[in-house]
Length: 205
Image (cartoon, rainbow, N blue to C red; front, side):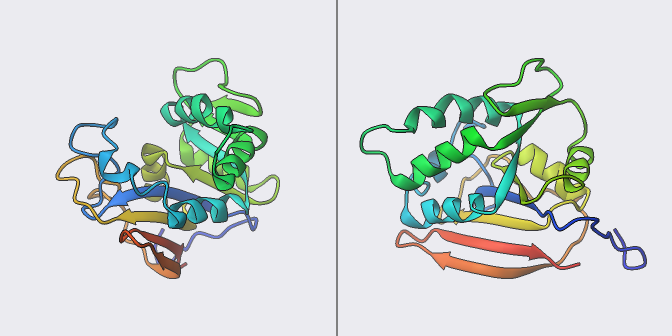
């Protein structure tokens, strides 16, 4: 995108990207993608759970990378009707099962879980197609490689970030060098008792 030729949207569907980040911008710890120690303790706070409940309330389509699709669909559905589960977690689990899911993968042939389908195509191409059909937000939920690809294409309209008060001291950062320069406006913020921040930024176009 540039100032002379701004991107225009043919529908009102927003692409919303959600991710939890450390203060140094990483989405996992120094031990690799499975090292979620800097983040996991904050994912069960009221602020984090309310954060999740808010963005699924407007989303009707989920776009997921293969790893997160298989992980999420292997974990969340089992929480439905489980004893002692937080109602917000159960609501998310029900939403995840029922909603349309598009799984981006170059290797899968069968879609994981019900109401899901596999697309072997660039993320920007997939969300551009989704904008032209249906209603409601298109949620890219905790799939950092997909989010990075969409940020590079300037196809993200809203960022939902849970920022936790820890330095990962390594790991992979969401906002790597090379992304296009863009401007964002703070639409909402909330701080938790442990110092976690729920932040909503809208793309200023």
